[in-house]
Image 1 (cartoon, rainbow, N blue to C red):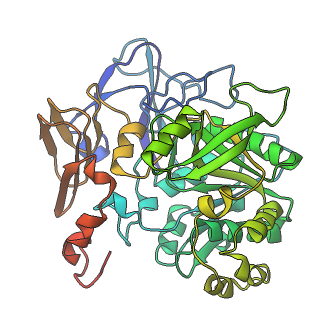
Image 2: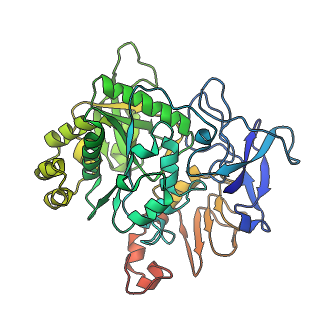
Image 3: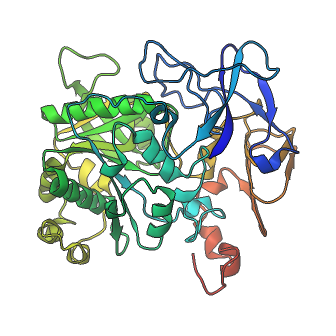
Length: 464
């Protein structure tokens, strides 16, 4: 069992010193307990302390059951405002370890987790041998383990299906042993998330019936408040049970991000509930708009699509059969359980373009749960704890007169001096330095590197 320090704080942010891992105890790292920069947080939930660097206890809120934990004995010389404890890190969340009761939904909620691809935007850490889903980019656990953990206990591990590719399936199974091996749906080739959604929906329908509700979620998301997310999933499940076939969770759009989808809310689903958190019908869904259109959509009140969809299994299959011609030729084979034939008869298309932009009755539910997409190195400044000049650090590092930097050090100590907006990544045998702006698209760089540099520690004959 791994043990890490967690803290529940009251009052203003306070500087602390500590090692990021047991092996770094001789080289302290400056850490500041700071409010996450993403503002899509539950209105009734206080700021999360020590988020991202340790399994921090969520500040307890008596007005929001299931959110937060009371932590025990005061130790150390840290002042009366801090309760410092040692807590176990497990694949399952602390809430479940402490016996949190499952939310009574009256529904048997399943999950389909999209976990394909290597994640080349997180080079040089990500590789075929260690794909993005196995990296601990946000917390102490790999992204895939964080995803499964934050769904529990609302979605039991036995009801989690993982759609992934053959080259990383074994590694993912080892990372989440609580998910049965039979729940891994292994694609013979990348088929796109619309096909992954259809396969997951067909499998849920086969195992639990077409009226069963499931959540489709990506494995590379960050959620500051998992309990709030679970409550949203229950609420969305109740909405789908009452009529609308599909509900997407939407986060406040904070900037004209061209890599996200946008859901433009219209009339409230319930005329008697028109508050800011009310579910609303979607008048328009736009996937990855250009910067000018993104600005226009934000001005009109559009929400970011979080990549989280809640739907009934049968309804998804009906929508795909009606609206997604790229998949239609293979649906009969999918229903017959002949997945290889299905894969050979379809065209790749994303869930957003192939389904959400086309579905006639889509609902968006505002999601105040501290969501963010962990899509690029730059995203780590939003989901990791930052020091007082906005630097996000993992590993042994000293930053002096530096601001807005991201450092991920797995090999040796990193010293950063007098720069801003820089990314530094080290692993044994390789150091990578660029600006955070340029780090968002690494393909031009990777195309020009020798194979043995693109894949450190592997044969030059291998390719990324």
